[in-house]
Image (cartoon, helix red, strand yellow):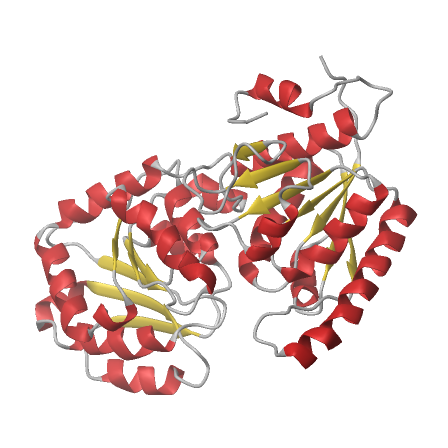
Length: 393
């Protein structure tokens, strides 16, 4: 039995919201357990600093080799080395007990620094494809946490410890999954939420208003749509909706996603890891159009699990047309039970305890592996297996 102790845990995350939002959810869980938490991020991740209330945030250099020629890659190396030394200095200064990286090149310097210092390390992969940075680091860290059971490029036998925790989401979204799905009948309002990532997506600005404008007036009157648009598209989208009978709210950024998810019957969007985890945790069906240029086509892999479970409908970018969407919406209007069933299937594959399970792993790494005065173990897998998580020695 391990005596509860607190530790100083470092989150290594940066880049886009897909990496930052799971880090935020884990931060909230760790703080609730009494741990100290610090975020080490990059320039892009630092823009999310207002969300990470109550913790210290440090910015270090980082860079990616992707899309660069030989000369560009050579110039990248000094930035990465500088970032490693900066992170190493921070980790020693704060006395880090464990470090968890959320993938992508912004997490690389901090994980490498932790490895050089002998600090317990964990990686979290949000997508159904293990990212390149996580692929490179997985064989060296103490634990790897996955969001999907079937994650491409994972070597279960080579890594020290691998577990499927799911992708952490905010508590406000977890709570939605415990509520009843909004009633949807032949004569009731049909609420649709359209999201396109942190910057919106042009394809939804083009296709969605065109599709709903072709629906019969009676069907239009039943619709309520909240749609995220790119700033450069929003006025054009407003004009497309102007001649319809649809109640529409357009925005460039959705400040309160949990509230929007709570009342939505259907979500239309891309298939980033955060989108999939939020839909399945909240129990909402989705029409998903994966971003075709995502690295290793990971958005398609993300969405495939939801479609296979019957919780959503998956379309390639070139298949998602106004005519196709109009037919789908008309079918849903005639058969609302189809949408309700998809919502149930979506909820069944959700992992609402992801933040808790991931916190358990990181906490035990910090306490068991990081503090030999508490308990001595030769293999952390033996201790972690007490929680019933999937692992390979």
